[in-house]
Amino acid sequence: MIEVRSLRKEYRVHKRAPGLAAALRSVFRRTYETIVAVDDVSFEVAAGERVGFLGPNGAGKTTTLKMLAGLLHPTSGEAHVDGHLPRKRERAFLEKIMLVMGQKQQLLWDLPPAETFELNRAIYDVPRAQYQETMAELDELLELGELVKKPTRQLSLGERMKCELAAALVHRPKVLFLDEPTIGLDVSMQASMRAFVKRYNERWNATILLTSHYMEDVLALCPRVVVIDKGQLSYDGTLEALVRRLRPEKRLILRLGAEVAEGDLARYGKVVEHEKLRVTLQIAHADVREVVPAMLAAFPVVDLTVEDPPLEEVMSELFARTRAAREKSEKAEKVGKTETSNDEKGDEA
Image (cartoon, rainbow, N blue to C red; front, side, top):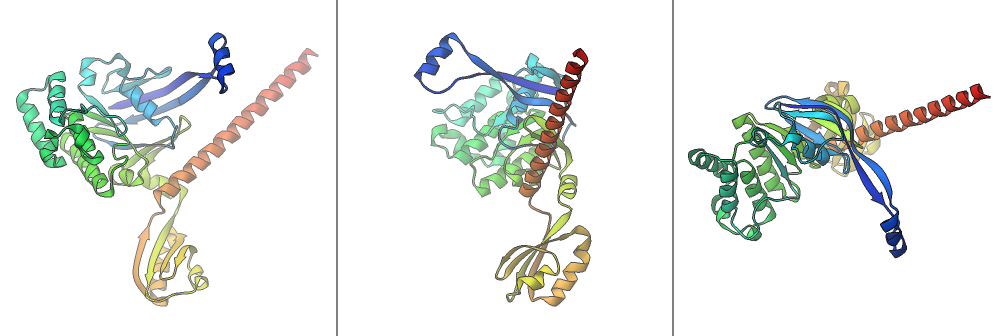
């Protein structure tokens, strides 16, 4: 459904120092810098997949989504969405996709969301019968109720986001690009949004590419993740494989009936956290079967949970490793260029 090949996006940015003098000089002479937002990124997404598109701030996630939606043109490389070139913005393409951005809105501020729904129905030429059927389903899944009749400016952030999603799905898009759809929402509303996105994916076999800084969104929705950092691809695969590759251990979380000395606990693994009756141990994956029965026998355990390391820690380690590898490669490249230059000078002499 989505094919990305060697995608690259560059921006030419004007640079100047602060102050009036620098501003006046820039009128006659400007200095520009080339910023690479996306650098040689390639991946594929099959129809019906839910894929997390992850990376730190400034990694190039939103830029990539905008290129896939046809809002930006790539500097080089190609992207195809269901066989279409996004940059052409063909009607058949636009009827299949929707980009939902948590920090932007399409709802008309002073009018009820129902007016935006009707406007989108007309824009996409959705038959009245299909529109009513779709809105009935969205009303049931999102619990819209009377919200659609209130002016948008009177709705809370969570209520607006529900209506934003409904407006985006009036034409039943086959591909959803979701850019931080749960940003700013409370825990309950985030859970509701995640449940809705999953049901929509299963109901219509929609392809979903999701960016989010909330790892709960990723864990709940995305069996596979594509990770970019500084515009370059860092990882493409399942979450489970990523966790096992970077953190091949388990976290043992214990709630005790009485305090236990940290030295006694350290015999079974690395003590990550020790707060009176709550203990978190880090142990090797292969040792879980031996350590759990031993600790149950040795300590007054009230409750015990075995978990993977937090995904936030896994992602931080991935970013650290990829950046270290990139810096090492850049240093080696610079050394190679210097040696080549010296050899050429020697030949000339």
